[in-house]
Length: 77
Image (cartoon, rainbow, N blue to C red; front, side, top):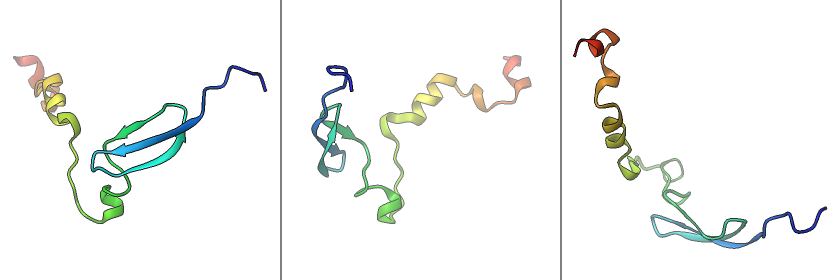
């Protein structure tokens, strides 16, 4: 292998929004995630709606409600 071209592989801590954290190895350093195996609905069996950073509102602002109208109604304005 060539020397000095590979990134540094070091121990890092992954921290979830629920407060759970664990140690692993990564080239990026410490990581923060929104959801993990301790709070994910698939693993917990509990239904939970996850809307991080207002994605629905962001979508509605971007398309302004025009996205759901039929093509003929969009051009009438």
